[in-house]
Each structure stands twice: as structure tokens, then as C-alpha cells.
Image (cartoon, rainbow over all chains, first blue to last red):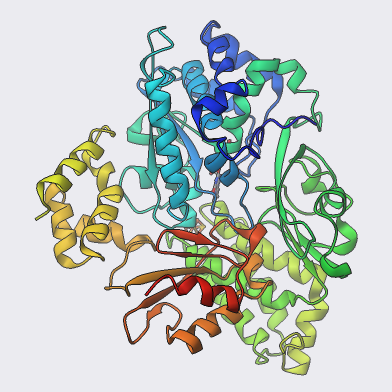
Length: 420
Length: 154
Ligand SMILES: Cc1cc2nc3c(=O)[nH]c(=O)nc-3n(C[C@H](O)[C@H](O)[C@H](O)COP(=O)(O)O)c2cc1C
Ligand code: SF4
């Protein structure tokens, strides 16, 4: 498959506007400004693209909601918070292909009638901030941004807003709170951001990878795009593979590539000929899969049927040397730390789960602790204000489902046999 | 109070948003850069330049983990220990930093040279373990590589 999102990224100067243009960049924008905004949205609809931020929401549907709202100005926000542990797929776009994202945002802004854009960039990517800001300056200079884009009188102003280290700010309403200068705590939905978003105006929040697909959709047309990968959620997809594989990294493959192929064909198989034990397929908020559960298509439709989720496409591969209790405990430390504290099931639940997991891992687990973990997770599930708490509960439930014996061993033997 | 150059910088940031409170997070970063950490004085400066109550500034800053509420060492090491880094040895590196440089997790070494912040995923999972030293990024870490790298941060 020809590369779309990672196109030209092996060129060391790929972030420079002249290199991007040499490789055909900003031609889709030139084409888009000749089109009616409605027709661009129609192509996006035909493409069938679903948002790459984790939830897989159909992009054109979100856009249509925002466009149907008569209020102006509208804001377009690119979600570059990329905080889901295991995820490093947006980073190559931000650092090596910033103009692809900018072009995608300008086209989207024009289609949506949004004249102001922000890139909410996680604070942990200081290099990306400098690269993006330099790229934005170049784009202003060459009239791809500003008040008279390509001499067509189209306005789109873009800037970078740097986050400050809070995972929950990746959730779109928390992100909006954060951009407004508040604590990043999720808002009640409805109203949805497409109606009442940043500064109370209609706001479209899309992931980096989603927006980076837009120039290609405009280039080849929605119908041709829809033929790539899975028919019910098509397009190129970035999978990021980490852990015990020979060739960890970000792979651009057709959506729906099988998890087995991603690990064995593309990422070179298990490191040092080790034996596969488990895979977290979509970032640590997605339920773990055992070694024999990896014959599934990595897309938004097939993964739930396989017992997990596509999430951010962050594949974490674990071999036989990894302790699953320790992984669960570390994951829960993360959720406890990142819980925003707004709702009780999550704030208290993550704290409880972490404490129980900590004692099991440290050889102090008690009879009945596994049931207690399941109970607490069960109480949290479906009762939290936002998906963070739900995800935390699902991680524990998934681990116990597939690796109950390891939890039992820890409690019975009063130690972790993986510790050296 | 901030000097004129900084005040101008903050004015420039305010212009990017429809209201002044939105400039709070970026302004806190600037205050941190100017003062080294978010001291009382630093937060007062932010509150005054944005015309916001100090309680709002302090309350908001406390939510975010990248703002420093204590003076830090000369160099801040931000080491990831989340799953992908953990399974490839990041916890061993935390111990190493403590024994070799006397810098405890989420603390500062006695000589004031380093602070160590334990991070949740810095997006370098494919080349784990990884860390930032100040704003410089390093990955594929081992004890030996850390020693070589930190030679450049005196
Ligand atoms: C706890 C939590 C964290 C999230 N983190 C991110 C993130 O880092 N990046 C992202 O694009 N979406 C993240 N999301 C999803 C966003 O809320 C939102 O659905 C997404 O940005 C929409 O973009 P898309 O339609 O292009 O996928 C997160 C959601 C939750 C609940
Ligand atoms: S589920 Fe957790 S992160 Fe989400 S609102 Fe509740 S406390 Fe905050």
C-alpha cells in the first residue's frame, strides 16, 4: 500500500514546507478551495472514515452535526494529546509531517465553516511544539493559512495550545475545559461540543490521524478511499507496536489488518524468539487478549467482537517473562493518578483497585481478593462519568478473565515468581 | 512583576484566544520558565497579567502535573515507567538513578543537580525505555547510556 500518513517521512527534511510541496503537498487544498464546502463533506461521508482518536465515531456525522448548528464562530480543535499509554502514532505526523496535518485542518476548517483552529498538543512533546510552530509560520507565509488563503478570501487561523500533563485532557470535553484555562474535568453531555464547545460555540474535535487523512480523501475521492481496508471502517491506519517484538515502531497498514500479521509479519515477531503471552491491542485502556486471541481484524467493528477494542491502535506485546499482575498494578497506578476526581466510582474505585493489586503483587494478597477486585470493577463499570473509569474497570476484568491463575498463584505463594 | 518582554509575550498569547483566561496554561509555562518553578510570586505575576483571581490561577495549576510547585534541580529528568517502558526495564533505571546520582523518584538529588519525575507515557513506546532531560529527548535507555547522557548535564 502506498503511504499516505507517513509519506515522505524518511526524508530528513520532511517537515519543511518546500519538501512537502515537492512531494505533492497542499495540492489537495488547492483542489478543495475550488469545491463547495458541502461537497467536501459529502466526499468525507462517502469515504466512510471513522475518527482515529479511539472511539471510532464517523467523522462526517460529527461534521454534519456541527454544520447544522447556526452559531458562529465555529472552532476546529485537533486532539494531539496522545496520552493513552502505548500510543505513539500521532507523533510521527506531528514531528515529521506537520504540513499534512495543517493541510488537513485548513481543508476541514473550510468545509466546516470554522475559521479558527487549535492544536491541543500534549506537554510531553516539546520537540513537536517547535516543529509545528515553525511549520505554521511557513504556512502563513505561503498563504495556506491566514485571512486570504490562496487568494480566495478564505480565513483559517491556527495555533498550538500546549497541555500540561493530564491524560484526561485527551477526552474532548476535558480538553475544551483545559483550552479555556480550567482544570481538565469532563463536562456533562449533552450538550455535545458540536453545539456547545469551546467558548460555548460549536466545536469540532478530531484526532491528529483523522485530520491527516482528509487531504488524501479530497485527492482520490471518498469512493476510492472507501475501498482501502475494512469495508465498514476503511482507510489507512497507523498501528504502533511496542514491547517484546523484534521491530517495534509505527506501521501504516490498511485498516483491519490482522493483529497476528501486525505482530508477526510487520513487527518481526516476538523478540529473541520468545513465546507470546498476551497482547494489549489498543492502548492500556483496552482489555488484554491472550496469545491465542490474536486472529482478529484490527478495526473498530471486529475488535469488540474479539473481546477488546481498537482504541488508539497501540499494540503492547508481552512475552512469557512478563508478570500480568504487575502489568495490571502498573496500569491501575496510572488510572488512579490520572482520575480527575470528578466522580466517586472512578476516584475511589481506582484507588481501591490499585491498593488490592499492590498487595497481591507484593505477596500480601488475601483469600477473596480476586472476587473483591471483580466486585469493585463491577460497581465502577457503567457508572463512571466518562470512559476513563470504565476503561480502568475493564482492564482488571479482562486480566482476571484470561490470567486468573497468575493472580491465584501470587496469593497462594505469597510472592511474585517473576521478580528476580 | 514580569518584565516588559514577558508581558508582551503574554499579550501575544492572549490575542490567540477569544478570552483572557484561555491564556492561563501558556502563561503558567512562561512563569515557570522565568522563575524556574511556580512560586507564590510567579503565580501572582500570572494572576495580575491576566487579571484573574490568584485562587483561580493556583487551583488550575495544581491540576496539571507538568507545573512545578517546588524548586527543582538544575536538570529535570522525566522518566517514563508506564507498561511499555516498565516491561523493558524502566523500574531498574529508577533504582539506578537513585543509587548512582542520589536522586529519588519524584525528588531532587542532595547536590541539586537532578530532579527525577516519574512520567506516565511520553510516547516513545517503540524505543522504550525513554526519558526527557529538560526538553531533550532520549530513548533506548540502559544504565550505561544514561551515564553517558547525563555527563552532558552538569
Ligand atoms: C480518557 C480519555 C482519553 C482520551 N484521549 C485521547 C487522545 O489522547 N487523543 C485523541 O485523539 N482522543 C482521545 N480521546 C477521545 C476523544 O474524547 C475524542 O473522541 C476524539 O478526540 C475525537 O476525535 P476523532 O473523532 O477524530 O476520533 C480520549 C477519550 C477519553 C475518554
Ligand atoms: S470517570 Fe474518572 S476521569 Fe472520568 S469524570 Fe469520573 S473521575 Fe473524572
